[in-house]
Structures are given as structure tokens and as C-alpha cells.
Image (cartoon, rainbow, N blue to C red; front, side, top):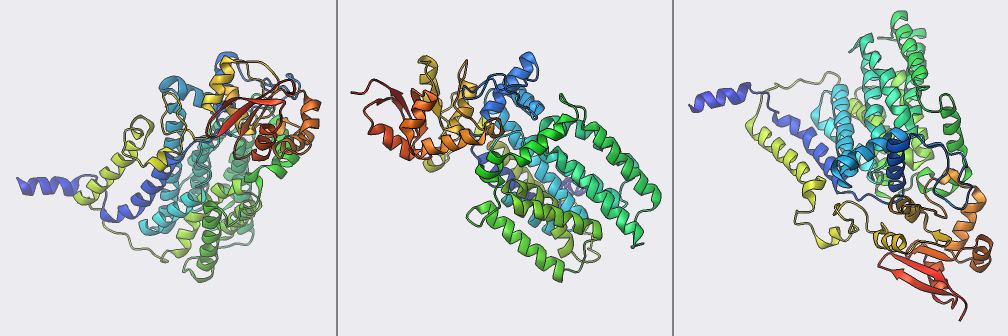
Length: 505
């Protein structure tokens, strides 16, 4: 009997012990994703837009702010990602979008793991790659439309790399245009897919001209170029057609976005993700110099392009990590890695099952029942029906008060504006995180108000009579209004405070 069971275990499709070198780091990254709070900044207004798309179609104007005309044009480029989040909300309540984030993130990093293993033949090195890529994403794990772009980016990376290495044929490239139809409507990072195709065309074409070993022949180059053209055509399948490229250019050259938003600024060692980026870059330099396997011209071109992007803005570090860490694994691998026997192992299967169950326990339906520390629980707001999911600075109480006591011209913290767009029936905010909607002069006034610089003049200029402030981000204005007899407190909690203007006493 025991002999029979042992035989079944040996023949079953179970993971081997060496697979755990990859599965454990992947589980760590998946756990970090599931544990990360969702900030109010770039989520709630997208959920409101998802509802509008579901009920009335894709909007094209401001709608939510009183400081710019209601009919001012605005491109909701991530409308499909917004709609999908709203569908998850309809299905699972406010737990749904966070669950989607967790699944999408785990899927994307599973693809990073598989790509690193494909390049290196080593689960140890693949585990190192996925861990470093995950650490570079640690400050970018909030629920936002970008989540929907992670897996398409990795799919493009894997398909193009495997095609260049002659591991797949032309049929694999057929997946690129339909993927792009999804990507171009889900998030503005679709241009990275075009960039990958362009870099592969340039790199592989140059390798062919130089007659390098394993360079593609004319037929494979022609198929790659045709796939690139078909993918470019697929980008036109969106509500605004070719104008989607004008939107991308506007975003990349928008002074408020580029000058005021932290994630557009270069990475620094002051953040964990920045530290991981610089550490991984040093590893890459050492691996390129000392490793036994070299990158070809195309991979070097890709690495340089995405390193330049990551160096220019923190928001690009996630893409660099996903692309470059499998290359790091390749450089560190043996020239001809040994292939271990693919025998199932019961102990490895038990560990893998424990990892799966552990990650499952961190998902929204079960997370709140875990015995988590009070300090961790303190990171979250008490959002009805969604415990331990949304960050503590989500102005749930203040929005409920405003819903019951509407009216007035409200000045608000920009992150709070995002939540108010979702929570109020007819929101009219001063600003929100649709940064490119507002002119630079308005953002300068917003920052001056937050610092209480000439705040009386600016309040008169805009006719502000209510102010919902963040105690931490707008502390100078909180203190100034507290000392000003013409303002009284309407509502306050640990993170926010709402003032109302009255006749000076």
C-alpha cells in the first residue's frame, strides 16, 4: 500500500524541491501586494469614472471640479481599467478592486519568475530576479489602473524575447495586436509595448546586418516588422483614435505632472524601492562585467533604454525591474545550466500548498479575520464592508459629513478630492489627482494655500468658504485657520479637519 502511494507521488505533477527557490520569493512578493494599503490618491476617482462608463459611456470632460469649466475636455485614457474595477466592485463590493489588484500583481510577477527561469535555467536565480523586481515595485502597489498593464507588459516581454531566441514561431506574435487593444484602453503605459517592439526591430535588424551569431533571417525580421505595424494599428482601437498619442505627449510634457508629482521625479535612496533599484543596478553592472553569459545587442539596447527611463522617473522603475531582472538572472547563470530531474516531491508540494493557502488567507474576504498587529491595523481606514484595505488617510468620516451637510465652495487636499469624487453624489472639488486637468497656476495657488502663504488673499480670490484639510500634508494651513477667528471647525478626526468660514467674531 505504502509502495503504491509512493509511486503515485513520484508520478504526480508535483513541484520539486528546487521549484521552491522560485515559489517562496514569489509568495513573498504576493504577500507584500496583498498587505499593501490602497491610498486614496489614484483610485477613487477612477472607480467613479468606471461607474459612469458602465452607465453612460466614456466621459470626455471635467465633471467633478469647480475650479475649471465643467465642459473642459479631459481624456479618460484608462476607461477600460476603470470599468473593470467597477465591475469588480459590483461583484464583490469595495473588496473587489483590491482583490483584482492582488491577482494582477501576483500574475505579473509569476510571469517575471517564468521569464527569469527561461533565460537562466535556474530557479534560484529566477527567485532572486522576482524578489528584486518586487522590491522595486514596493512603493507602487496601490490599487490603480496601472495594475491592468503589468501582465500585458510581461506578456510582450516574454513573447518578443522568446521569438528573438527562436523558441517560438510567428504564431506567438499574433497575440500582440489583441493584447494591445486591451492595453491601449486600460492604461497609458501602452506606449511601452510599442517601445518594446521598436527596440526589438532595431536590435534584431542591426544584429542581422552585422551577421552576428543566431541573428534572424530576413523572413523572421519581416514577420516581426509586420507584427509591429499590426500592433501600431491596434492602438487606434480606442474612443479617441489617433489622438491617444497626443494625450500621451501632453501628459509627458505637462508642467504640473512633471514638476510637482513625486512619482515623475528620479528615484532616490530615501525610499525602499529606490534603494532596491540602485542595488539591482549595481548587481547588473557586476553581472555584465563578471558573468559567464552575455546579453546580445538587442537585450543591451532594451536594458539601456529602460534604465534611462527608470533613472528619469520613479514611476518607470517597476517596468525596468520586470524587464531587467530576468536579464540579470541570465547573466549570472552558467553557460550551459544543468537541468535537474523533474521529480515530484511530497514535501515540496506541501510547502507549495502552504504558500498558496497563506496568500489566499491575505485576500480581502479573509484578511480581516487574521490576528494582525494593532500597528498594522492602524494603517487602514474603517471603510464599511472593506476592512484593512484602504489607507487610514482615506477621508471616510469627512466625506460622510459633507454628504449630510452639502454646499459651499470647498478647498480640499488633492488626495481627498479623489475620494470625494467617489463618495459624494454631486462632487465639486477644488483639485484632485487628475493633475493634467488643472493649469500650473492653479496648482501653484493650491500649494501656496496649503503652506498658508497669502492664504486670505487666495481664499478671497477663489471665494472659498469651506476647507477639508489633511493634518499632515497641509499642517501650516490647519494652524492658520485654527488661529483665524473667521473660520470654525465643522468636523475633525485623526487625519482630516473640515473648516467653515463664518462672519469674523
